[in-house]
Figure 1 (cartoon, one colour):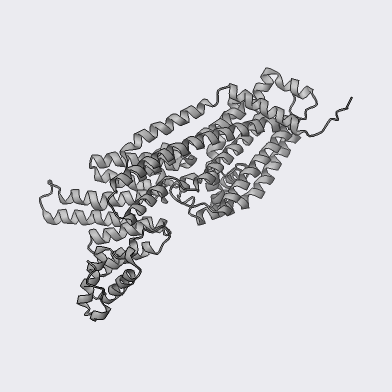
Figure 2: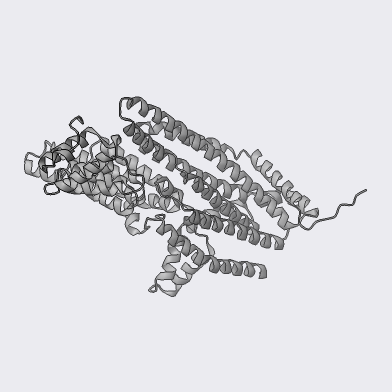
Length: 295
Length: 252
């Protein structure tokens, strides 16, 4: 009979927790969000039929990526906020932690489940968006070819090039990845807040404030580091905001990407690393607080 | 309690590490034309509280689209003052969206200017012409500010060239801006040709125009468009080009 050794860190245990968390969240019908996203997409694309194709594509991309950003952020906060309080309420956490499962693994499994859920949601929303955009692009291309059938080849090529460049550009893909990383950051931060919060309502409210302050953080930071005329109370407040909150504006790149700004590899890489850094730090801090939590 | 103090200390330490990284990233964003919008009290007054908060929370593009749709409705109602105001907000929120600058300029220089000229409530022609010129100016202003925000893209240079050509009949400037558009990546193939056409209408620059048109002609069949041949023949006659250097008569 082979003897199984206990491992201090096990991917199998984390994997089991991840799958369990994902299944649990799926049963809560969180994927209905995707249905709303599809309705927003189809509704806006029908509404925009009255505009020119450039206007239509611009608004379609803005609305779709904006909706993707808000849905993933909301999903990250709401799904994560309930994880620990729900497990405590259902007493599942006691069953799990009574087994030789370290608390860090428990949290890692939980956050990995949420990140997986966010990845699936982002993928599905991204695919739906690209599908609608591609279908609209093809419709416009065919209509243009029909209207310009007698025009010189050069003019047709120019017109088709303009349509294609207005529709899909490759920079949208890194933009979508940045949206996902922002959601991951928010999920990790929510997990951290939920380790010392007593209810999920409290966590959600705190996260709503953090979301807004995070978008203002860059303004506070610049004011703190540059302005010398402010009194010390203002400066201390700005310093606290700048040091404690993440700069969420750094992850809002899609607005400019849709407008045609190209994202360089270096910029994408730096933004992605910042997102991963925040996610890791907040998960570690959550684990640290969770270790000291009385259960 | 110690744990809480440790967490706060850790957050502050992380803050001190990330601060220069975030500053550097913000600077890089601005350098690469991201974060081009200044969130200040002026913008707050323009957008209203809700719009400002939405724009600040990462929904700048959606707020801009909402205002653009309002501008579209105002255009359908020919409320030109409102169209101008809304497009100023839209372009402030989305300075990198070429479409908005272009549309704003088009509404002002083409639609509003024509409406001003046909305004039946204004019996004096001089005042109608004055109003029309003012709308041309507003259109030009949108395009110039658009170019300032997007110096790397050819579309607005081309739109400004058209404005000079069609509204101001200023072929010199039209040629200059078509040439600037042609020099940028992604320019339309006809921009270079259009620049030469416009130059051919400029008094005193006929020789330069002839040389450019001839260079285009020599590039091959693709460039030998009817207008190019017509302008080239006109300049050949005007400049007394020797017969052996002229393009064949078979070109029509």
